[in-house]
Length: 152
Image (cartoon, rainbow, N blue to C red; front, side, top):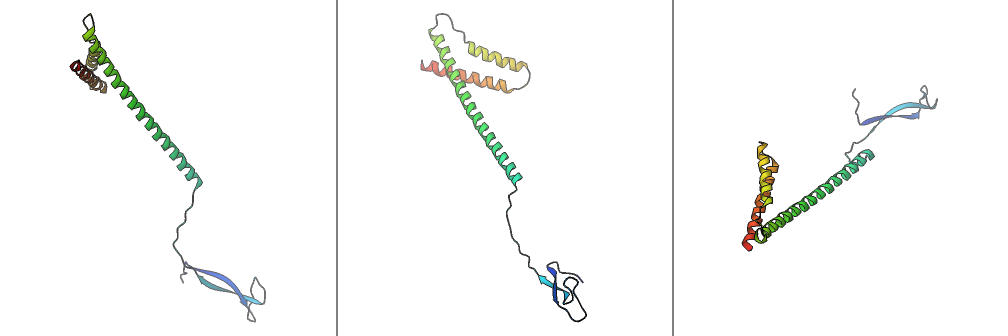
């Protein structure tokens, strides 16, 4: 006979008949088994594992640290781009000043130097980011210089 998984048999003791006796309780009772039924219910409970919680806190701190470093790198990048723009404007202003007010003929060394760097990158034979950056810098320099010459 199959037993029900939700039924639990529990030994009970009752008063004995004349010839029976319970091995645990002695001659006055006899051993009988009865069944009790239990209902299963679905439920949820939350447990916090301390090791996993600690690991999650460490990961969160690491993530916050990485995000902070990314913010710092972005801020530094913006500062460097602003400084680069200032240098380009200052060199263009200085070139315009020298070309207009110098006693001796003015040679634009900044443009020559940038062109020399571009040629050096072209000789390497590969398309590099440096070449593109030098070309962008030269075009910014020329545009700034033209704008200043038009104003004067």
